[in-house]
Image 1 (cartoon, one colour):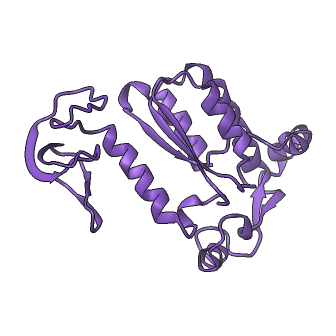
Image 2 (cartoon, helix red, strand yellow):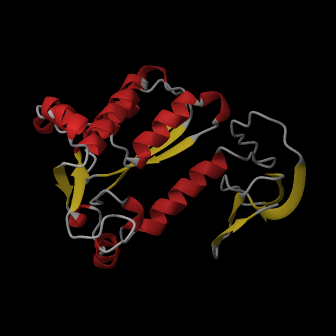
Length: 227
């Protein structure tokens, strides 16, 4: 649900958002389940906590440690099967419909990442959104064999690194190789010796954003730094 909410918020606040990274967003409801919508809509009016479905932890990722933590998270309804109340289910459907409705005028730059074996949020919904969105700067990245929580899979750090690289390309520009990113403001500049995030082989004095957190790209490690 988080990815879908991020898409809706990005669309509503488009003038304040320079780009978005969306991980396995809910953008499609299984047609078989949609036929129960009238019943769920009725139930949520009188019994909002009535359980209409349950989520299987095993569908989240392949990591047994993450699955165990998910099952017994006291902030996430402890238990092997996660209940989905009627009102939550209806709000999920309404959120998906809102996201689908904004496809044709979604112009914000974005990266959409999806696991090919995700059974929680169907990949077809993400593919449709990507194909319909009018943004001229968009990228769709599939992670082969991954379930819903792509950042908790065995190659999770690769997923995180891929997202960080995309963010950096949209926050900075390279004064050496002249590959510029869509920077929409003129920030206060600070200088620091670092390697170009555009894969330029030269060491440069990188312009960074004063007052903004940035990702320091290093061949040895990636760490959060604030200029």
